[in-house]
Length: 154
Image (cartoon, rainbow, N blue to C red):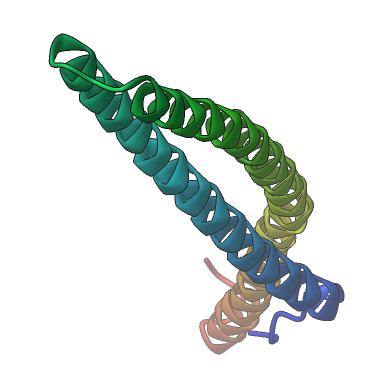
């Protein structure tokens, strides 16, 4: 049986490497996204806690200056939260872009994988046909030799 050789093996290997790099880039982008999400969650908790402290101070005898400082803190945390939501959205877009790139890289590799499987199957079929032709020739040669040994009778 002849050895199978896929002419595009090098191209396939390059596409596999590119796909692995795409996976690494996606993992990094998802890591950034999760980090931004964690920071946003932390800011929301801080904003909620600051609001609760302000409510508690308003329920007691709070001074005007103290209430103003708490309101300024809440305003600053709200602004930080809005900025963090923007950073999170950017990170999500980057993750989605990496995901789309990875799908394209996967498709490019998968096309070559299917072609390789098809060519391998063709190669196997050709080898089986060649083996069958050889066996038929051997059988014909043996039966021809057996006929001449028996005097031409079958």
